[in-house]
Length: 346
Image 1 (cartoon, rainbow, N blue to C red):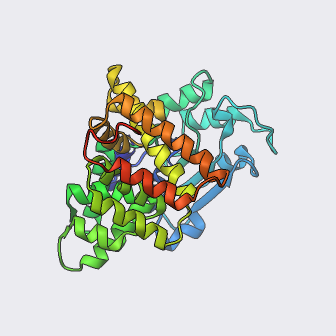
Image 2: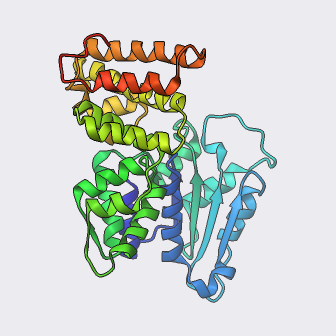
């Protein structure tokens, strides 16, 4: 797990060869950054830090650099990007890479160098000899999408690195507002830490005051108010969006997506799927699935299907210009916000 390598680097436990892979870009970049901080001094980085992109550079040159003694420092750091030969995909390379050179280096790496393979791919080809050697000799780090608990731990660790703590509700709100983007969460934690000054705890109110809410997040909040029958707050969000000149068709598309997610989540839950399995099947962050599971309990499957059918009719009427777009959406929300049991016509 990526957090394990962060801890080991903090303790000064540095390995000669790392293979970083996965699609979570922020975790890949942050891990490279931490390796760099642990291995190379700022004063000698010009001499002892090399970056090779295998879409342009040769693998042999990167290995040769790793075998060169560091200058005016204890270690040399060599970062090798885009080693597509570790995947099953066929790609025309500018250079014909000699993989035997790398295979030999992995088994006997230079003791004075740290060699990092940066592979931004979801999976490595387990059948390849090179992958098997890496799994045996290198420190393998997978940067995959975090689940709900891992995201919460990640946010807490970011706050801790700033000398702060964060309320659980504040962390959950941050995930929603940042659309689970780790890089955005990282930036917001830095901003929030500066904002609260000497205070130690980042509270929910701090997040609501400081973190901007985009259209998708506003629609998510609108749906949350609707499912909980908070009529006044739901309509206030809707009217605020109209004042901001948000397009009703775009708003409706996001409402459709959210209700479709609630219906899909309800279906999978009824089939016995857990939160993690549902998130994997729907390719949605686990925290959003957790909230959708709670929302799904407030509707029957029939109600959700009726809502989605009504939205489909509205979509047609909006796009053909048969009825006023704003009025259609407003009437739909008013019907939906009727007390439970009075919206059977949807």
